[in-house]
Image 1 (cartoon, rainbow over the protein chains, first blue to last red):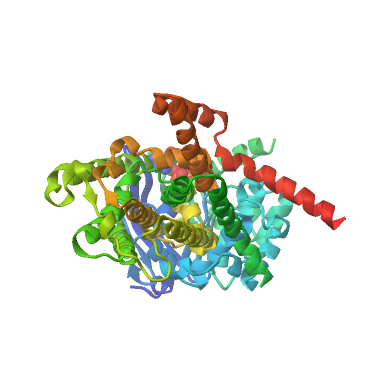
Image 2: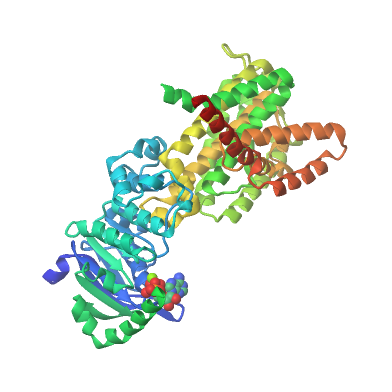
Amino acid sequence: MSADSDAAIVRAENVTKRFGALTAVDQVSYSLRRNEVAGIFGSNGAGKTTFFNLLTGYYVPEEGSIWYKGEDITRRPIQQRVAMGMMRTFQLTSTFDNLSVVDNLVLAFYRAHRSVSLWRMLFSTCRAHRNEPRVLAALETFDLGDQRDKEVRHLSLGEKRRLEIAMSMLAEPEVLLLDEPLAGLADSEIKSVLEVLGRQVGKQTIVIVEHKVSAVKEFVQRLLVMHEGRVIAEGGYDECMQHPEVRRSYWQIDARQRGDEQ
Amino acid sequence: MIGALKWWAGPLLAFALLAALRLLLPLAFVIEVLIFSIYTIGCSFLLGRVGFISFGQPAYLAVGAYGTGFYLFYFGTNPYLGLLIGLVSGFVFALAVGPLFVRLRSDYFALVNLALAVIIFYLMQKVLADVTKGDNGLWFLTNIGSTPGLDIARPEGFFVFSLLVGLAVWAFYKYVNDSVFGACCLASKLNEDKLKFLGYGNFGIRLMAFVLANTTSALAGSMYAIYLGFVSPEITSPARAADPVVVTILGGTGSLYGPIIGTLAYTGMKDAISKLVGNWELAIGFLLVFIMLAGEKGIWGTLEPRLQRALSRVKARVAR
Ligand SMILES: Nc1ncnc2c1ncn2[C@@H]1O[C@H](COP(=O)(O)OP(=O)(O)OP(=O)(O)O)[C@@H](O)[C@H]1O
Ligand SMILES: [Mg+2]
């Protein structure tokens, strides 16, 4: 094993995931160094989300293996990976819409910083954790203070996105995987979310899937570009953008993005 | 102190009102309402909090009732001990079947529970007829000994006891609803994937909810056994399998006081209509369909927001 792979906190080795005849992720190898900020980028259906699902345990790959801090976690269940320090968000925002904003945060906080024991959960109230400094700080940071007691189903998409990111960050995971966290956010919101994430640089490993590479260009240190399930380029931003295959598929994305903005 | 008083105000008021009902209505009616409410709150918790609809609640009711019944018929005389045995039987039984059941999707869950109720019905009616006396049932009213303190062998004593148990059960569920566990139940009902990715296990949460709810149903069964002084397979009759679900929806699914309101309405309707009409079950069937179509939130679900609005208006006026 090289020194490089020793420093890897998460590593995928030749993972493949098929849906019927479609190979959504095709022999992808990837390694994330501790505390780096990486971007995964690629056109629609490139397999970015599926790759996330493999890393976080939503799917088990048909081939290949996933490693975390030198341990093979290919078949580990989701909760174990979370306990080991992985946390993700979903492309389609995923929150508990029937709970209040603050209780969503309390649930994220409680598992990470209190307990997973059912008895403890039964014998502690949500109320007792609503004023935890970390929960209050999350409300403040993501500008959700005014929505504190609202049920999440009454929130706007942007607010829900911020809530989901807030929940994932409350757990203070070692590896934070964000699937299109900026989609549906206004420019001012994008700025503030990136600012919050920016403060974590050097403290957490962050992986961010994004269509608008331009938005996260300054932020990510390394890029992985996927196309139709395969990795077509890997490295620094400029390096990747000059890759001929990327230029071809990037042109499509660029066009799509312009379409989005109209 | 004031916080605690405020917290208890709801349950205390509810049971004070039920106690006051005794002044207007026959004892048997009020006791039936108390026990049936306890029976229903388990079902309402499962449906409203965890998203499990069960058409087999009589199974758990019967386990509690027979647990208590066997003890009082064959072994002992102390009704409090009988109650404890019924409760423990229910707990053990729910813990035994729960791990298989809570993995199922909601629609299968409903049917598997119904099947369980049917199985228990036949077990009690036919297979175990030697010990259960089949359709005749076990009669042990005269076996039940008087107890020092609150004598629950007498109906008046049992009434007070039911009020206290009811109050305790409601305080318990109010507490559970406020707990982190209660929030997890709601979360698991809506978005189990997200809960997993926060690091919680859905299975344990559902199993615990299942066991709590069905132990409550078994408690109601035990109470029936002691109050009536007999148990027969009728208690787990498949014909009555949907009752708690109907009452849950009638009262307002998942709301804390829905089961009481629903039970009052249902039992009251049954009483009133059966006095007037021959085919009362048919009449009630139609009435229920009509009520449920009229308001899917149930009685309490419709009333509560209005009450709260009225209350805040009164508060505002007092403040001025
Ligand atoms: N559960 C599934 N069943 C069948 N096909 C799937 C499933 N999930 C993903 N796919 C397919 O796999 C391919 C990769 O999908 P994936 O969601 O990973 O792409 P993506 O890069 O995240 O795209 P987008 O930018 O649109 O989010 C797509 O063709 C998609 O249709
Ligand atoms: Mg995707």
